Length: 106
Image 1 (tube, rainbow, N blue to C red):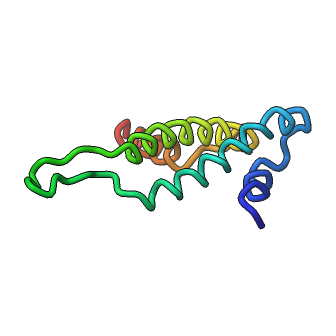
Image 2 (tube, rainbow, N blue to C red):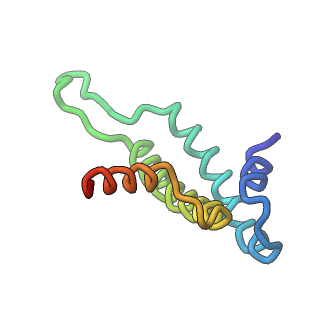
């Protein structure tokens, strides 16, 4: 199963109209994931051979950082759609905080 199919499976159960709107976003997520994998193969820090204490970030690091921010935003949108399907259910984090509040109030 390719990555696009995996993401589509995760948002299964949403309306066809919403899937049509999300389709370009899913394509972008898959594209960004591929670029991030390629950028990981490149060095992120350049070291001055004459003075190893002098270091700087490379262009690959800067591109990775920007793409990862875009990727994170897109995934948050997709997760929001998945979370909407489980409406009425508390996440594990919400359950934890509710238990903590109950303990503090007791």
